Amino acid sequence: MDGLRFLVVDDSLLTIKRVSALLADLGHQVVGTAGTGRQAVAAYEDCKPDIVTMDITMPDMNGIEATRLIMEKYPEARIIMVTSHGQERMVIDSLAAGAKGYVLKPIKPDKLADMIGKVVVTPEPA
Amino acid sequence: MTKIPGDLKFDRLMGALLERTVSFLGEELNASVLKTVASQTVASDPELRDMTAIVGIGGRLNVLVALSFDKAFAGTMYARMSEGLDIAPDEESLYRRDAAADLVNEIVGNCAAAFADVDEAIELSPPIILEGGRNIRIPKNAEYRGMCVKTDIGVVDIGFFGPREFF
Image (cartoon, rainbow over all chains, first blue to last red; front, side, top):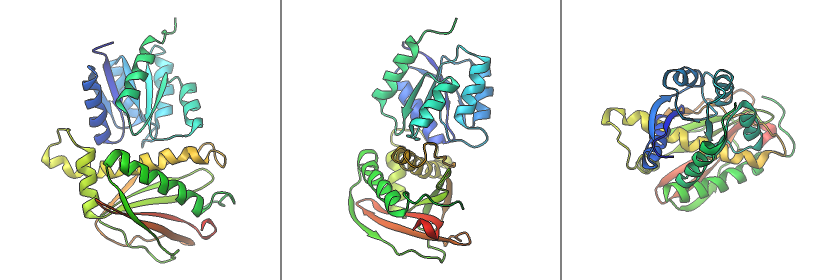
């Protein structure tokens, strides 16, 4: 599971740096970043990462809509929602959009590592 | 502003927000709360501290939450949230604003789960950051009420802007 390529999506540059540092500590590589949902869709097409970490509340287009658009075009995409929004409805909507997992901020390194492990073993659609 | 649900008024929302703020400060910033002081409801424009992060809570609620930090709190918050990160000096002001935005996002976002019985799909707006002590103009027919939280790293005010019936 070492050395996976990540796209980190968040409207906070500080969060992007913090998530990137956590991923580097876990042995992974950040190959792209985006600050809005619309940028995330474009960045996915550019860098084709192994996994996306996706915020929900963002200007321009939210993370659930961006997930839906990415999954429509790339059903093999693996997206983990990383968000502060704690409502169950958001989890349900994220999974319905195609996300493979959900990690609540503030991010705990062990929780993120566990979720990456679960997402990696999730079989890809045929 | 829309009608506030009768079972979700200021006291309940402030209670949840204060509880989450205290735990967040301890867990994430290693800060301790020394004292909390409640303010009166005011219809005039409240005075903000050095840096303020405002989030809109949508859905059935439709109120604004403001966390306003004094200079000492904002400085320590940034130092602890950016610890170990490589940030260029000329980008620091940008990251200071993001630290305030992240804090209000995480505190208010985490609280949303506590109100699923009233609104299972609470919408949160991206935060707005205001810098410099100033008065903020409150919307017509709205009021402000808050709580001052004194900590060992500085002071933060938690405040709500909403219609009178919210308070």
